[in-house]
Length: 436
Picture 1 (tube, one colour):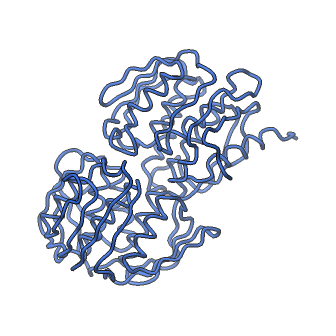
Picture 2 (tube, rainbow, N blue to C red):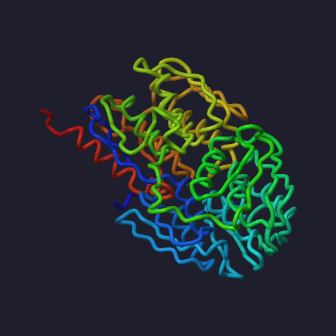
Picture 3 (cartoon, rainbow, N blue to C red):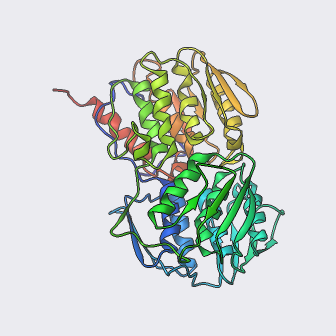
């Protein structure tokens, strides 16, 4: 549905009930697209996410010469892998503000045996970290020409292939840079021996390692020594899975609907995603379910480090005004360099809503205060602000079902969950139906 520039959020007046079908994981979809392109035959992804970020990735692969076919109605994407070959030797790629696409495609282009590839994104992407990955690729033989500010997009990569052997990477600013190097290590002339400089959030790196294994690749050393990782070259490409490759529902998107019953009451089922047993999911963001278990039915404020599942911290921060006692969120300094400065933005919007907020470089402490009504929250072109505050707006502040909170630019949800507000309204309407 078409969304207005400013969307008032109708509160729930009855407890939520039923179930919600989530879109596929963005992180898993974009990793799987690259793995499929590096495979030795056709791969069909089922349950794939169709959003701005995944369409950017699919279009970039087409520009690089791959056959990529999308069926949004069936939630499938088919990619014909070419055994480790990159057909195009020249391309201009636009990565928007898609961090996974930007880092993964940068490494992919540099890993090719030859070619010149220009990569750029929207103005926000030109401020997001990439230097650590490019420095590692230069160690491996790639030549980088900066077309703007050195260390940031845009730039041109002149590929020479990856030498293999020892390489250092600084990926503390974004684990996606390390994941990118792991994904393309199969193209190196010999096994990559990666030394990771500084602390890296392991959850998404582990996701990458497990997906690589599902495509027949191997990374060793992550569990034993997080600073040294060996990536096996193997056959120089991945193996296409037997049968379709299923993408899990998005655990980050699940965080909003896990939080909704705390805001509106009731119960909500999320089929297709295992949240009780982390061994059954590739996604570290499933940990958010444990945070809400700590909040409990008493809706207690919590003190939690979100460094390994930081995409969900905005969900907790947005509903913190409804909890009993302060909520302290730590381990989020790196989110200042994501779609926007998420720490500063969240502090500003909660203050706008009347909350007392203490902000440090790495944390937020939120002291609940009476919520201010008739406020329009900024979203900073960041989908997670829109969805998190969309959930808070479901709280019936006045007890009469009248909207009290509006979200600016709700269409920014197209990045990962295009129909989020449609799904939310469907749940609200379902809650109003007569009950047996």
